[in-house]
Image (cartoon, rainbow, N blue to C red; front, side, top):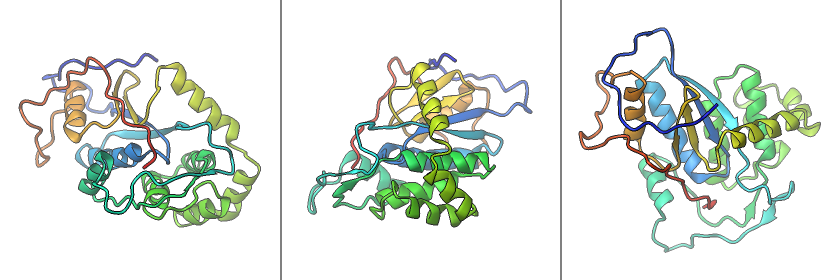
Length: 245
C-alpha cells in the first residue's frame, strides 16, 4: 500500500454509494495528538455514518521498558497552555498535569487489538484508554487497569486478563506496527483513507471534510462547512509533536 496526499478535492459525486470509505487510524494511547484525533474521527463518523473505521497500533516510544519509567512533568501549574492542551480543551478533553510516571503502552495496544477481534465497536474503549492516561494519570501498562476498563465495555474480564498475562496478541500487534512502518508511517496520528491517501498529525476537521470531498463524498446537509479558503493541498505531511504531555 502506497500512501499519497491528495492535492485537490473532487467535485464529482461518488459513483458507488454502496462503497464505504475505509479509514484506518494509526495511533498510540500515550500520544496526546492521537486523543485529539479520536474526537475528529468521532465527528467524522457522525457526519458520514457509512465510513468504516479500523484501528492500527503504533508504539510511540519503544525505549520505555515494559514496567514503565519515572518522568518529569512537562507542564507546571501556572504555565501557559501548550498547543495540544488548547486543542484538547476545544475538543472537550482535559489533560491533567503532573505526570511523574510514563507507562509502556504495549498492553493497552493489545487490549484494543483484543477488542477489535471480538467485534467491539471500540471507539468508546479507545476514548476511555486515552482518558485513563491523560485525564486520570492512570497506568495503562498495568493489567488490572486494562481489565477494569475492558470490563466496562463488555469484554470478558477473565478472558482479557489471560490474553494480556500470556501476551497472546503481542506478536500480532508487533507485526501490525511493522506493517504500518513499512508503508511509510513514521508519526502518529496517521489517518489512512482507502489505503491510498493519508492525513498525518495535528490537522483540524476541515482537512477531513476536504478529504471526504476528494473521495467523492460531498459535505452532508447540516454539517459545518469548512472555509472556502481551506483546501487540502499538502506538499509535506504535517507531523504532530511526539511529546507525551
